[in-house]
Picture 1 (cartoon, rainbow, N blue to C red):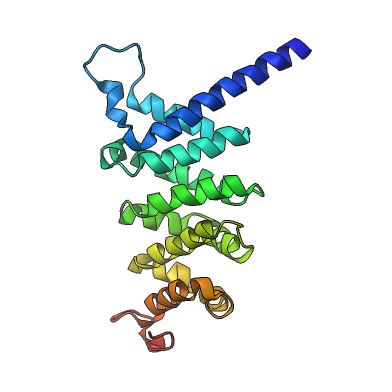
Picture 2 (picture 1 turned 30 degrees about the vertical axis):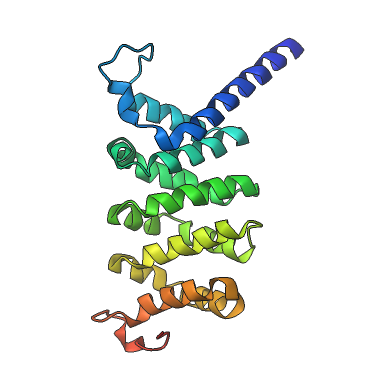
Length: 218
């Protein structure tokens, strides 16, 4: 039993080290390398590579799901990787939102960072994230708790600002108007961001909420 535990521990360390190396290389990584015509010992395709990363994201091992979240967040920055990652956005959103609720601050940071990059990809990503159950609540919790790293709180606030930029998301986000207003008046660090969010919600021309126009005017 002890021997088996040692082997498993060593395997986990090997995978963790490999993951950390790939994360560091992620800004340079193009998933099309897996379909390259050049001679290679790698016998998997892009889809299988993405599935492997998603498997790590779903792992109970903290080092693995944190590294996988960070890796996916960095991969999506490269437009050439989008065709391989966009089909899994719904599953990706669900797992990342789950990680945001974890008590471990590093898991929250990795998830928020990945969600931040995903929200910048296109309108569809923003619409799907806004409709993901608990997404808004958990992003607000990161800000209110707050997360010990201010940059993570700032990114969570900017994700919300990105979501409200889509007219189709505004009915969903309007339900959080009082929560946004509370942060606006209680936390000076993010007051500008939440002022813009509230303005977008209630003061956009031709909005069906235009009766509230000017309440949060800037």
